[in-house]
Image (cartoon, rainbow, N blue to C red; front, top):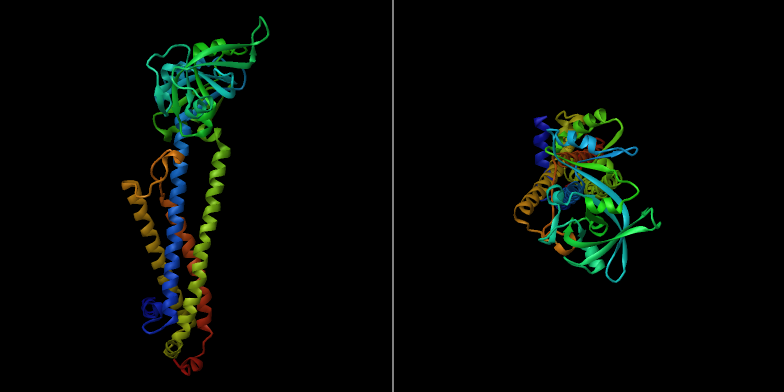
Length: 398
């Protein structure tokens, strides 16, 4: 094997004065560099944005959510759940779709979430743009996007209504006046435009049809305990539904996975095109080195030896390109995470630098796919070498 590898190194890039084969060799290496670099950088950007979206979802809703199949009393199990050593925080809530009105009687359909407002800052990992010093029972928190649509600010008066909760006296939903005390920015447009936090006191007045809580949001001390805790709670509270953040957002998670696979498939075409160029490079090298191949045959080299030489040469050319491409991309990712060398508009993405995260599995997948393409390309080219006869090769004029 050392002999074949030595000959492959001699043949690499066609040797001195080999003209087109040397040029094609460098083109193959550059193509492999661009392909590997593009795939790693693209995957790291997708990972960065996915991680950011997931953190925002968990920061807004928690790691686990307990709901009920029927009308259940969550207050009975709340104290047990809050005392679990694996749980950092637990929050009871009521939730209902309703209407919010501004002073001009403009209305928006929103989702009211009734909680203990004292726990708002502690439980939810969101940024508050504006805060009022005086928080009372009529205080509400709305997203910045909803505040823009209603043209309101801290201290402004609004009215809220839950149409499905009719008053038993006159048959109309209760209309309650509230005050904007907090404006938050979750960096998730749907939340910032739709969610309105109200106090549990207002919730009792507004949600007349159902006075019990709708569920419990749970935040864990260590997210690695998520699967174990879900299994434990399912066995302990069989009449309740236990869902992780992944269960609540299955469609989004599946969409991100499909997008990732699609992007990887498209980017792999760059490696595939570079592999086609690698075939032409190796064929040109075979033509330029046909006399040397004939001499090797005359000295007793078998078809297997000749094939190994071409395979090794393809691996050297492709391997150098893939190694440089991956190394360069990892350096860019490191510099980006440390110094933020690639900025992005914060008014669109809510961050001022491009998020980039790469996982070891991603690097291994790129290396594996590239290796498969390189082996196939080298094998195709090697078939041209083994059909060369000794007499024909020795009569070849350089």
